Image 1 (tube, rainbow, N blue to C red):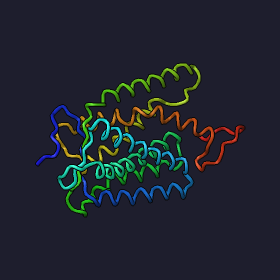
Image 2 (spheres, rainbow, N blue to C red):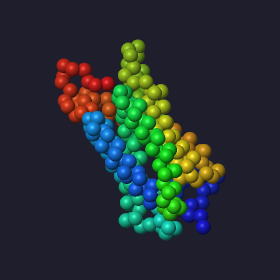
Image 3 (tube, one colour):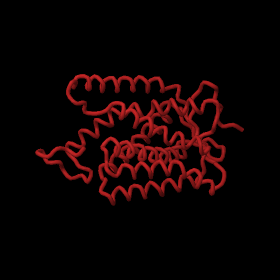
Image 4 (cartoon, rainbow, N blue to C red):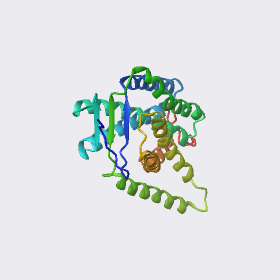
Length: 254
Protein backbone atom coordinates (compact mmCIF):
# COMPACT_ATOMS: atom_id res chain seq x y z
CA UNK A 1 0.00 0.00 0.00
CA UNK A 2 1.33 3.43 -0.92
CA UNK A 3 1.57 5.70 2.10
CA UNK A 4 2.01 8.85 0.02
CA UNK A 5 0.37 9.51 -3.33
CA UNK A 6 2.09 12.14 -5.45
CA UNK A 7 0.35 13.79 -8.36
CA UNK A 8 2.30 14.84 -11.39
CA UNK A 9 2.33 18.47 -10.31
CA UNK A 10 2.79 18.01 -6.57
CA UNK A 11 6.04 18.43 -4.67
CA UNK A 12 5.90 16.04 -1.70
CA UNK A 13 9.43 15.39 -0.40
CA UNK A 14 9.45 11.81 0.94
CA UNK A 15 12.13 9.72 2.64
CA UNK A 16 12.20 5.98 3.26
CA UNK A 17 14.89 4.81 5.68
CA UNK A 18 15.65 2.36 8.47
CA UNK A 19 16.73 2.66 12.09
CA UNK A 20 20.38 1.93 11.26
CA UNK A 21 20.49 5.05 9.09
CA UNK A 22 19.44 7.18 12.06
CA UNK A 23 21.93 5.49 14.43
CA UNK A 24 24.85 5.88 12.02
CA UNK A 25 23.97 9.48 11.31
CA UNK A 26 23.83 10.34 15.02
CA UNK A 27 27.31 8.82 15.45
CA UNK A 28 28.59 10.90 12.53
CA UNK A 29 27.18 14.11 14.02
CA UNK A 30 28.99 13.44 17.30
CA UNK A 31 32.27 12.74 15.47
CA UNK A 32 31.85 15.82 13.29
CA UNK A 33 31.19 18.01 16.34
CA UNK A 34 34.26 16.51 18.06
CA UNK A 35 36.42 17.38 15.03
CA UNK A 36 35.19 20.98 15.10
CA UNK A 37 36.03 21.20 18.79
CA UNK A 38 39.46 19.66 18.18
CA UNK A 39 40.28 22.30 15.59
CA UNK A 40 38.73 25.06 17.75
CA UNK A 41 35.94 25.80 15.28
CA UNK A 42 33.66 26.78 18.14
CA UNK A 43 31.77 29.44 16.19
CA UNK A 44 31.08 26.93 13.43
CA UNK A 45 29.82 24.39 15.96
CA UNK A 46 27.57 26.93 17.68
CA UNK A 47 26.11 28.01 14.35
CA UNK A 48 25.63 24.36 13.33
CA UNK A 49 23.75 23.64 16.57
CA UNK A 50 21.69 26.79 16.00
CA UNK A 51 20.82 25.41 12.56
CA UNK A 52 19.66 22.14 14.07
CA UNK A 53 17.45 23.89 16.61
CA UNK A 54 16.06 26.24 13.94
CA UNK A 55 15.21 23.33 11.63
CA UNK A 56 13.48 21.53 14.53
CA UNK A 57 11.34 24.56 15.29
CA UNK A 58 10.41 24.97 11.62
CA UNK A 59 9.84 21.27 10.89
CA UNK A 60 8.05 20.17 14.05
CA UNK A 61 6.53 23.48 15.09
CA UNK A 62 5.76 24.88 11.64
CA UNK A 63 5.26 21.95 9.30
CA UNK A 64 3.78 19.47 11.78
CA UNK A 65 1.94 21.45 14.47
CA UNK A 66 0.83 24.52 12.54
CA UNK A 67 0.44 23.64 8.87
CA UNK A 68 -0.10 19.86 9.36
CA UNK A 69 1.95 19.15 6.25
CA UNK A 70 4.43 16.72 7.85
CA UNK A 71 3.72 13.01 8.42
CA UNK A 72 5.85 10.20 9.84
CA UNK A 73 5.10 6.48 9.45
CA UNK A 74 6.89 3.65 11.25
CA UNK A 75 6.12 0.11 10.04
CA UNK A 76 3.23 1.58 8.07
CA UNK A 77 1.63 3.16 11.14
CA UNK A 78 1.04 6.91 11.23
CA UNK A 79 2.86 8.31 14.26
CA UNK A 80 1.41 10.67 16.81
CA UNK A 81 3.13 13.70 18.29
CA UNK A 82 5.67 11.72 20.34
CA UNK A 83 6.99 9.46 17.58
CA UNK A 84 6.91 12.28 15.07
CA UNK A 85 8.89 14.60 17.35
CA UNK A 86 11.81 12.20 17.84
CA UNK A 87 12.13 11.41 14.15
CA UNK A 88 11.93 15.09 13.20
CA UNK A 89 14.36 16.05 15.96
CA UNK A 90 16.98 13.71 14.52
CA UNK A 91 16.29 14.76 10.93
CA UNK A 92 16.34 18.46 11.77
CA UNK A 93 19.53 18.26 13.83
CA UNK A 94 21.20 16.19 11.11
CA UNK A 95 20.50 18.47 8.18
CA UNK A 96 20.49 21.65 10.24
CA UNK A 97 23.96 20.99 11.63
CA UNK A 98 25.52 19.84 8.37
CA UNK A 99 23.85 22.51 6.23
CA UNK A 100 24.80 25.36 8.51
CA UNK A 101 28.37 24.14 9.04
CA UNK A 102 28.70 23.78 5.24
CA UNK A 103 27.48 27.35 4.71
CA UNK A 104 29.37 28.95 7.61
CA UNK A 105 32.77 27.57 6.61
CA UNK A 106 32.38 28.59 2.96
CA UNK A 107 31.06 32.08 3.69
CA UNK A 108 33.89 32.62 6.15
CA UNK A 109 36.39 31.08 3.72
CA UNK A 110 37.75 28.81 6.45
CA UNK A 111 41.13 27.42 5.36
CA UNK A 112 39.88 23.97 6.43
CA UNK A 113 36.56 24.34 4.57
CA UNK A 114 37.57 21.74 1.98
CA UNK A 115 37.81 19.10 4.71
CA UNK A 116 34.51 20.00 6.39
CA UNK A 117 32.62 20.10 3.09
CA UNK A 118 34.19 16.83 1.92
CA UNK A 119 33.23 15.06 5.16
CA UNK A 120 29.65 16.29 4.96
CA UNK A 121 29.07 15.48 1.28
CA UNK A 122 30.87 12.14 1.55
CA UNK A 123 28.63 11.17 4.45
CA UNK A 124 25.47 12.24 2.66
CA UNK A 125 26.41 10.02 -0.27
CA UNK A 126 27.70 6.95 1.60
CA UNK A 127 25.51 6.68 4.71
CA UNK A 128 22.48 5.34 2.76
CA UNK A 129 24.61 2.52 1.30
CA UNK A 130 25.96 1.50 4.71
CA UNK A 131 22.47 1.63 6.23
CA UNK A 132 21.32 -1.09 3.80
CA UNK A 133 23.02 -3.49 6.21
CA UNK A 134 20.17 -2.69 8.60
CA UNK A 135 17.48 -4.21 6.40
CA UNK A 136 14.44 -2.74 4.73
CA UNK A 137 13.23 0.80 5.22
CA UNK A 138 10.52 0.89 7.88
CA UNK A 139 10.41 4.65 8.51
CA UNK A 140 8.75 7.02 6.03
CA UNK A 141 8.57 10.79 6.32
CA UNK A 142 6.83 13.15 3.94
CA UNK A 143 5.59 16.72 3.71
CA UNK A 144 3.50 18.64 1.24
CA UNK A 145 4.88 22.00 0.15
CA UNK A 146 1.96 23.70 -1.57
CA UNK A 147 0.92 25.51 1.60
CA UNK A 148 4.15 27.44 1.98
CA UNK A 149 6.43 27.23 -1.08
CA UNK A 150 4.81 30.38 -2.45
CA UNK A 151 5.63 32.29 0.73
CA UNK A 152 9.16 30.89 0.66
CA UNK A 153 9.51 32.31 -2.84
CA UNK A 154 8.33 35.72 -1.64
CA UNK A 155 10.85 35.61 1.24
CA UNK A 156 13.68 34.66 -1.15
CA UNK A 157 12.91 37.50 -3.56
CA UNK A 158 12.65 40.09 -0.79
CA UNK A 159 15.82 38.96 1.00
CA UNK A 160 17.96 39.01 -2.15
CA UNK A 161 16.34 42.25 -3.33
CA UNK A 162 17.33 43.94 -0.07
CA UNK A 163 20.86 42.56 -0.36
CA UNK A 164 21.21 43.76 -3.96
CA UNK A 165 19.94 47.22 -3.00
CA UNK A 166 22.64 47.40 -0.31
CA UNK A 167 25.27 46.24 -2.81
CA UNK A 168 24.16 48.81 -5.39
CA UNK A 169 24.36 51.51 -2.74
CA UNK A 170 28.01 50.56 -2.16
CA UNK A 171 28.93 50.99 -5.83
CA UNK A 172 31.38 52.04 -7.16
CA UNK A 173 33.09 50.91 -3.98
CA UNK A 174 34.03 47.27 -3.57
CA UNK A 175 31.01 45.05 -2.81
CA UNK A 176 31.09 43.44 0.62
CA UNK A 177 29.87 40.06 -0.71
CA UNK A 178 29.63 38.28 -4.06
CA UNK A 179 25.90 37.69 -4.39
CA UNK A 180 26.38 34.96 -7.03
CA UNK A 181 28.79 33.09 -4.75
CA UNK A 182 26.29 33.37 -1.90
CA UNK A 183 23.45 32.04 -4.06
CA UNK A 184 25.64 29.20 -5.35
CA UNK A 185 26.43 28.07 -1.80
CA UNK A 186 22.73 28.08 -0.93
CA UNK A 187 21.89 26.05 -4.02
CA UNK A 188 24.72 23.55 -3.64
CA UNK A 189 24.17 22.70 0.01
CA UNK A 190 20.50 21.81 -0.55
CA UNK A 191 21.22 20.12 -3.89
CA UNK A 192 23.95 17.99 -2.28
CA UNK A 193 21.74 16.19 0.21
CA UNK A 194 18.62 16.22 -1.99
CA UNK A 195 20.65 14.54 -4.76
CA UNK A 196 22.18 11.99 -2.38
CA UNK A 197 18.73 11.04 -1.06
CA UNK A 198 17.41 10.61 -4.59
CA UNK A 199 20.25 8.54 -6.08
CA UNK A 200 20.40 6.29 -3.02
CA UNK A 201 16.68 5.53 -3.05
CA UNK A 202 15.95 7.23 0.27
CA UNK A 203 13.77 9.64 -1.68
CA UNK A 204 11.70 7.61 -4.18
CA UNK A 205 12.02 8.30 -7.89
CA UNK A 206 8.73 9.42 -9.42
CA UNK A 207 7.34 11.96 -11.86
CA UNK A 208 7.93 14.82 -9.40
CA UNK A 209 11.46 13.84 -8.32
CA UNK A 210 13.48 16.13 -10.59
CA UNK A 211 11.15 19.06 -9.97
CA UNK A 212 11.42 18.46 -6.22
CA UNK A 213 15.22 18.34 -6.47
CA UNK A 214 15.54 21.56 -8.45
CA UNK A 215 12.81 23.63 -6.79
CA UNK A 216 13.89 22.74 -3.26
CA UNK A 217 17.55 23.41 -4.13
CA UNK A 218 16.77 26.82 -5.61
CA UNK A 219 14.39 27.85 -2.86
CA UNK A 220 14.48 26.29 0.56
CA UNK A 221 18.00 26.96 1.88
CA UNK A 222 18.69 29.83 -0.49
CA UNK A 223 16.00 32.06 0.97
CA UNK A 224 17.99 32.35 4.20
CA UNK A 225 21.41 33.00 2.69
CA UNK A 226 21.37 36.83 2.96
CA UNK A 227 20.35 36.54 6.63
CA UNK A 228 23.02 33.91 7.30
CA UNK A 229 25.64 36.12 5.69
CA UNK A 230 24.54 39.04 7.86
CA UNK A 231 24.86 36.88 10.99
CA UNK A 232 28.32 35.71 9.92
CA UNK A 233 29.41 39.25 9.09
CA UNK A 234 28.39 40.79 12.41
CA UNK A 235 29.53 37.79 14.47
CA UNK A 236 33.02 38.02 12.97
CA UNK A 237 33.27 41.64 14.10
CA UNK A 238 33.23 40.53 17.71
CA UNK A 239 34.35 36.88 17.81
CA UNK A 240 36.93 34.70 16.13
CA UNK A 241 36.38 31.02 15.38
CA UNK A 242 37.81 30.01 18.77
CA UNK A 243 35.40 32.51 20.43
CA UNK A 244 38.17 34.85 21.51
CA UNK A 245 37.20 38.50 21.30
CA UNK A 246 38.24 40.59 18.31
CA UNK A 247 40.09 43.66 19.51
CA UNK A 248 38.71 46.95 18.21
CA UNK A 249 41.97 47.91 16.60
CA UNK A 250 42.22 44.54 14.89
CA UNK A 251 40.40 43.83 11.63
CA UNK A 252 37.77 41.10 12.07
CA UNK A 253 38.50 37.62 10.82
CA UNK A 254 37.33 37.07 7.23
